Length: 310
Image (cartoon, rainbow, N blue to C red; front, side, top):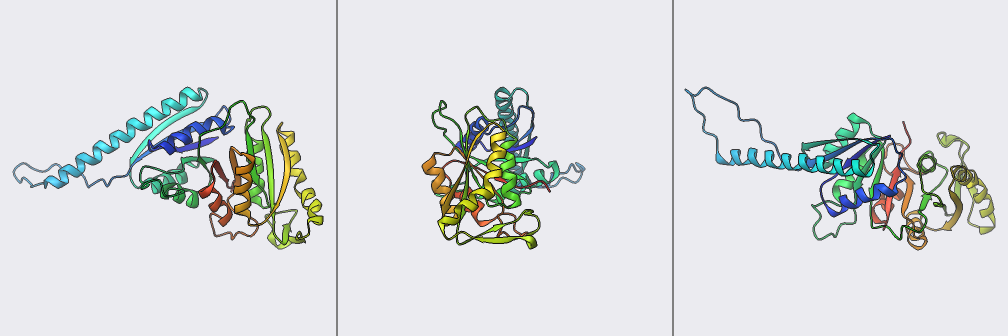
């Protein structure tokens, strides 16, 4: 598994690192810690013939010095954090990198080139004024534009003696099926509990092959007497999770999907929410659906937005 970690030294970034211990990640992983100095790097000051000395404004010299200093700080920070991660996960292969660039776009370009399976970030960075923003602009941009899964790590965690609780928003789409598989492929502690939450409206899509929307059918779910049919649809996913050694049950709620997922996560005490990037009503050209966007922005716990391998 390849994991790209964006780190900026903020409290939220530290929470995302702490969250790694509770993410069920495999013992073997290739990890790159990336710290980005948000500075403009001026063009280099070229060496010229002493017979034609060129005047270099003090502002340009200060800009070069500031960029160099910030990049060195980012390099030191990336190395320190990579050593910290190595101490937590000795079997991981951890490397570090620093760049001077716009943080979001630097991470996205690195992800496009390195092709990680998962990007890990904190919910907010240093640039948030007074902590008023629910999800920082950098995390939001990466979440929207990345082509792989993204985990927004939040803390703190509850009593470690209690079982880990995971909530998966399911709707039979390819992305939600990938979220189920992501949970099944991790290494969770014994006793981990998983809730598969289905939020019904008036009708629900049903397809044996979610990749073929033309073959999709719709069943009436406005009447709770038909919910047994809904439960039957998602029971194979619950059984798939049970076969991975976890406790699983199908939960059905009525209402707005994002609101119901957030409410259930809060009342049930979920440690992390897994959602697909897009649901059955998503548009292929959109990189992130409205439900996953709202959940990742407003959740009290960690959120992993899962994208299927393309």
